Image (tube, rainbow, N blue to C red; front, side):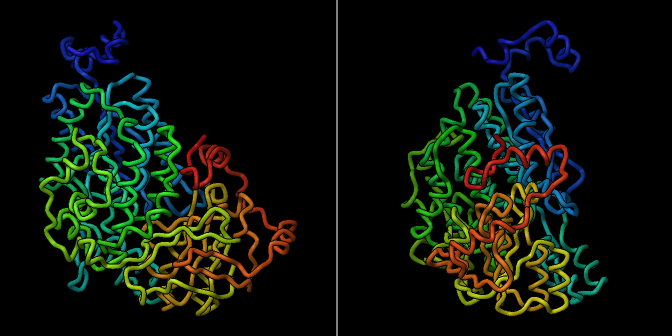
Length: 551
């Protein structure tokens, strides 16, 4: 039998503890697998994970291993809100450290990670890259939704209508009925926001078994994926296949190209960069997005970026089918957790609906889906996600700035008609160190839509917007952020702002000399008085261009 690293640290004390957990002596020689479970009953995103963890424990035992369940913080965007601190982004790195402390502390041999809402999967991948022990990720699925007035209605529809409600365009009773319809079971949000985008990214990167994303939560397909992953993680430990064996430049390239082809969440960029950093590589994920944006056409249009739904993508063949359409543009010799290279994973892959997953010669659009714009407003970059239909949302916008540092005041201004057609909302102080933890203008986006201004204004922010960049033309993740001295914090009302997505320009009509002069009286956007984890995050976090990791 192979000598596993966990067995080198056996002791009478460990034996005594494990005997009292019901583990027999002969089982203590098995490979010890961490089931990383970000479970919580705070949010429906995680409510099915405990059952999956129990099932996985039995499957790992049948495969020849023995498992230990590891719990982590479980951040959910719609629950971790309503306060000044940005616990969502900051919690990602807590997950990484939770996992490291428990798994490395106990010297376990491998990890089966149960991935759900936005930050769980990147936090788990970062931990895998840091510790470099065999790891498989299981995407635990998207939630089913209901209908409202006979039409598909999910949580992101509800989020949008909440903005309309704030503008007095939706009644209390209508909101109640919409809320009743939005969620009909556990799992992540249905749209192609950060969660489903990261599930797709994980398979494209080679860390989820082929054909397992996206998937409906608690479906037979999801349970088969869990069982297959349990068997495979024991094999990976025996074969000593580690994350850094797989986290190659070619693997990241395949992942970036896949995300571009489906116009995934802009948050995938910072999360993938963080994984690359934890793997101690010099891979520049942002540069990859910039480099390949013009070469990868848009093949998939899932809401909020298109007309199809996430279950349409699953039914059409999912990530494996998307990669099949991209086959001629991928690095096919990159190895994956399946034990096969990408080439082998794609053998026999079939696209079941070419209206949902288009071939390269019949793409939805051939201009970039996601671009990095630069200029005096964004010395490093600002991220712009473009809409499928160029007529629905402009790719070029020029107008006077309306500087927003207080979202409550901004909501009142929108409601009272203070924001006009042609304005560029400059939402600053939302960045990693400013919030701290990172905020976003999601509520403003939908309030603007509620007032009929969705495509008639533009937004520039040092915050994030996940997969919600589908209404106004937006430049998000502007770096450097205002709290770090970025020029976005030097803009004043009335400055003329130009957003030119296709030419990748983000510029204020203000001279360099004037911007420097304004620094003397610029506000301090770094929020004061934080304590605990947010203070640590604020003091230690690196810029978005470095993955927003804690150093």
